[in-house]
Amino acid sequence: MGKLQKSIDKRNALVKATIELVNNNGFHATPMSKIAKMAKVSPATIYLYFENKQDLVNKTYVEVKAEYTKYAFATYNETMSVEAGFKLIWNRIADFKLKECENAMFLAQCDNTPMIDEVSRQEGIKHLQPLLDLWQRGKQEGIIKPLSDYLLYAYAINPLSFLMIIQKRGVFTLDKTHLEEAYQSAWSSIKVCQ
Amino acid sequence: MGKLQKSIDKRNALVKATIELVNNNGFHATPMSKIAKMAKVSPATIYLYFENKQDLVNKTYVEVKAEYTKYAFATYNETMSVEAGFKLIWNRIADFKLKECENAMFLAQCDNTPMIDEVSRQEGIKHLQPLLDLWQRGKQEGIIKPLSDYLLYAYAINPLSFLMIIQKRGVFTLDKTHLEEAYQSAWSSIKVCQ
DNA sequence: TATATAAAAATGAACGTTCATTCTTTTTTT
DNA sequence: AAAAAAAGAATGAACGTTCATTTTTATATA
Image 1: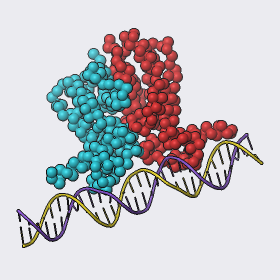
Image 2 (image 1 turned 120 degrees about the vertical axis):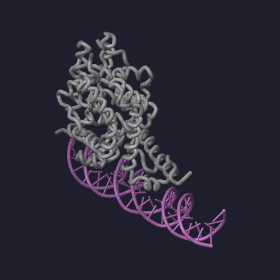
Image 3 (image 1 turned 180 degrees about the horizontal axis):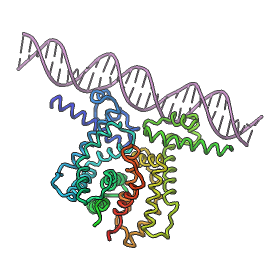
């Protein structure tokens, strides 16, 4: 195993540990010493990869957000119909939230707290452009309600975060049937009524 | 001003300071000393009203949650039609999120982090019963989709939290028009299609 | 190829600071 | 005058970060 690979592994271990500890204990109860221990690294080593704790958590956020959007749009292309495109993206996002549950939880927590710098937050938003473009097209074709992108997002995409969070708490389980129903609700909320 | 009133004022000041500081800086950057300073009280005095920091934040959460649900259902009664009842409650919740913005932000942050004890969280959920009952009735009458309460909540109510958070960030402003549109989206997502 | 040397990466212990909480004293209320 | 409430200063523990040192890796020399 080369030097470079070793470094990458260590960095990844730190990011992973950060996600896991912040998910379980919150930012306020996640000391650098614990992150180091979980990543099997000395506390001092963290500072070879990140400037400080804030930088570690910012970079973790941006990276996970990038993974999320990459996954969401991986199989989408602009030649699809608006309805098919939306369904595809919606399902990819649902997939991500189920399969990469830890990552998705981390994003949800970051999105609702002052844990992340505003700059990093902006960085994270950029990647959503394909979805906004799709909606633009949908509005032009008269298929999607002429609403602000934020309203569309709030009703179509964001509810998945809420569902994931209560699933994590064990009060609810998202199965295949639920997902189909959830998709129908999402689509109902943004499509133009026929 | 009597002793009791003075005590209540002090307690309220502490709760208010906690909300404001946690909203702006997050739990991790909200020391007891700052809370005390903002409430114009000695740090030691906090411990006359609350057991410790965790207790302070738990009790703050439960109290704000109680205010929230009280406000949401204040003008609702069970003789209303399902559609009218839902519209009323939805609008009261939207109202609360706009008028009591600080309180609503605090709840959103608490609901997405391990900041609050599980016990207090459960305590907070209890008050939603009138809404669940309304949906039950709506499902029986064939007006509301036969979905899990959590799915209904995710699409009908929770999006308001998301809208409020991005509003706070300044990227978006929820005006009267948006609210009507948002309500229509909410209702579309849960009503049975005619 | 084997060895010596320089550079880089990694470490555990230590540092200064900050924090939640408590202790002792003062102030206020009864 | 006694009791309760509040205050500020004090305390020990925990934290983020840095420092001095060791270990590992890369490079140069024979």
